[in-house]
Image (cartoon, rainbow over all chains, first blue to last red; front, side, top):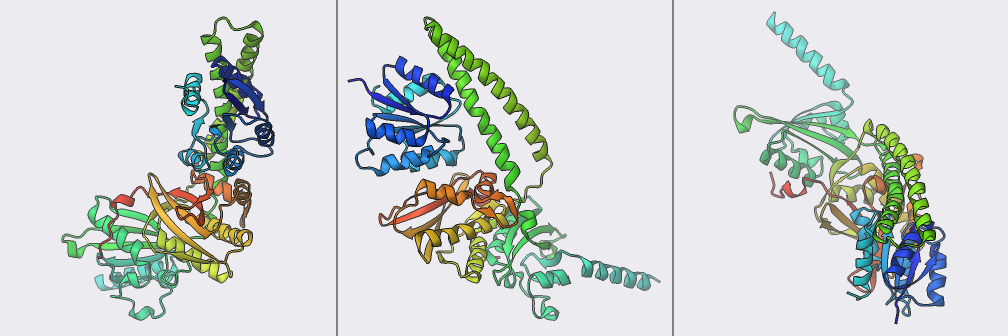
Amino acid sequence: MTKNILVADDAPNVVLSVEFLMKQAGYDVRTANNGEEALLAIQEKKPDLVLLDVMMPVRDGYDVCQAIKADPDMKDIRIIMLTAKGRPVEKEKGIALGADEYITKPFSTKELVEKVRIVLGDT
Amino acid sequence: MKLQTDTKNTSQLASFFAELREGFIVCDTNARILFCNPAGINLLKIEDADDVSGCSLCNYLTETALVDNINLLKNDNSHDVDFVCTSTDKTTLLDCHIKIIEGDHASKSVLIITLDKITHEAGHAGTDDSLLHKRVNDMRAPLANLRAAAENLASIPDMSPVMRIAFENVIAQESANLTENLEALASRCQNIAARYQPFSDINSKDLIYVLRHKLTKEKGPEIYFNNASHWFNIDAFSVVTILEKIFHHLRASLKKAEFKISMQDKLNFVYLDIIWDGAPISTAGVESMLLINMPWDNELTIGSVLESHGCDIWSQQHDIPSQAMLRIPLPASSKQRERKEPGL
C-alpha cells in the first residue's frame, strides 16, 4: 500500500517543491498551511509521516510535534522537521520533543528523499 | 629633595586610587591582600578597612571563581583573565579582571585585581544578535526553495510544462527574496560590528547565589542546587534576570514553590535544567515565556536574550518519570577544561 505523507508548511513554494518531490518518490501527499490545519488533517486521516515546518502560524511545528507524540493514537506517526532554525540546540529541541529527524533549510532534494525513505523504513 | 618628590608622588597616587570608581586590589599569588582602594573596600563590603591587609581575598569574593582563575593564571601562559563573580554576601555581581605581574622570583609575583559592579547597562546583548539570527534564518527558506526548484528542473527533463513554469517562477521569486534579505543582513552586520559584547565567564555557584538572593528578596520560589562547579560564558546580568523571570513564571503557572536545578556539560553548552514534580509544560507555554520583557528595555525579551546566547529552551520529561524539566542550554566557557579545582 502506498504510504501517506502530510506536508505542513506555510510557505507555498516549499509546499510546491516538497509535494512534487514526494509524489515523484511514489508517496501519496496531502498538504497543510499551518499547525492547526496539520492536526485536523492528521485526525481526518492518519499519515505515515509528517514533514513539519517549525515556524508556522496558529500553532508552530514544535507544538504540533508535541501534540502528536502526546496522543496515544498518533504517537507512532513519524515526524521529520524541516526548518530554517539551524542551531544545534534547536535541532536537539526538535528531537527532544519527539521528531525522528531534523533537516535544516536549505537542504538537498536527494537528501530529503533519502531521509524520508530511511524514516519510513523504505530503504 | 628626593624625599619631597617621593612624598608628593605617593600622595598623588593615593589620591588617584581614592578617586578611582573601580575597585583596585593588589594581592600576592596566594590571594592575600596587600592593598585595596576605597572603591574596592566598598564593593567587597569590607567592614574593617584598617585590618584588610594580609587577609585572604577569598574572604570577600566567592572562592571557587577566584581559586579557579588564579590557578588558570599560574598554570597557563596567559597573563590576565576576566570573569564575573559575586561578593561573599552573594548579593552583587562583580566584573573581575586579574592580571599577574611576574617578579624575579615566583614569591615576588603579584596579582592586580580590578572590580566593577555589573548593572543592567551591560545587559543589552539581545536585540542586535536576535535580529541578526533572524535575518540569517530568513535566507534559509528562499535558498531551500531555490535549490529544490533548480534540482527538480535539472533532474526531471520530461517535467510537464505547467510544473516547469511553476518552478521557474519559484526561482525568479526566491532570487528576489534572497537579494532583499542579503541587503538587510549586510546592514545589520555593520551595526553589530561596532557593538560591545558583555559576555564573561561566570561559575555556576555565583550564578545561583545571586539568583537565589534575588528570588528570596522577592519572595520567589525556593531553589535547590547541588553546588556543582560549571563555567559559563554569558551576559551574567541578563541571564540572572531571565532566570528570575522564568522562576516567577513557573511558580505561577505550575503552582509550585520549590524547584531543583541540575547542570550538565554538553559540547559547547552547559545544560541548566529546572526540575519539578509533574508533567512538562506545553510548547505553547514555553513560547509564551519567551515573550516576557526585560525590565530595562521593552524591545528585549527572554527569547531575544537567549537568542543572543545562541540558545533555545524547551520542556521535556526528566529521567525520573514522575518529574519534568525546563532545559536551558547556556554557552560554556571555552576555558572550562583548563580550570583546575585544587586550592591555592
